[in-house]
Amino acid sequence: MAEQPELLKDFHDYGANIATREIFLHNHYHTEDNQNPGVEYRMSNTFIKNLRALDMKSDQPITIHMQSVGGEWTDGMAIYDAISMSRSYVTIIAYAQASSMSSIILQAADYRTITQNSHFMCHYGSSDINMDYLSAMNYADYERKICDVMFNIYAKRCVNGKFFYEKFGKKPSDKQVKQFLIRKLKSGDWYMDADEAVYYGFADKILTDWHFSS
Image (cartoon, rainbow, N blue to C red; front, side, top):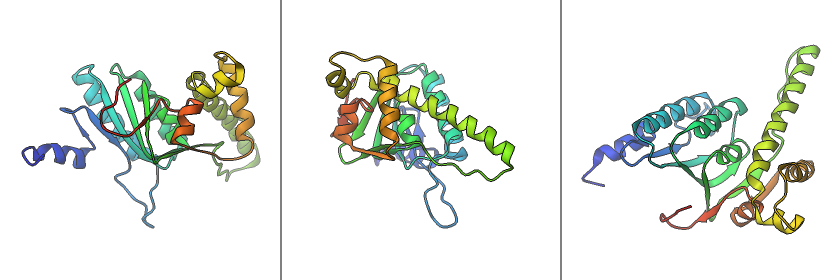
């Protein structure tokens, strides 16, 4: 590493390196109270530029190192869509947590890994409605659609989870998994350790060293 100071510079200054085909998905910015803002527009814009740079260079695999508390739906879905459209095979490594919006972003990867001491959390999210009555009603309708998109994303990947094979005695349909998840989240935030995240199908593997493969 000492012989390649430009590698460290790229990692720290840009959050990515074209040579190693790695991207670091985390915040480079903090709020005035020094709190981690999670997924927001600056994080999303930086990530999309990095992903496009690597994807345009070649179609070789890309590794994304993600550490995020979650955040804004729209900015997170911009990241999700960019990963989904990538021509390169994408692996995401989730560190510390895959919570809220970052738990959804994880589902965009071709191969989803989570470190052994991380946790996974999914929920309905929160609303901040400060508008007139009619506009608030329209926004509530929009949020119902958002929740449906979220459950479809989870269900599509969780159908291969060991838990659902055991529950239904065979590979379930997306609809069966979706209905289970809807009922489960009605009880509030759902926290899982890394083993449980893999068991339910939200991740593919627990990562314990740097030698990982699909």
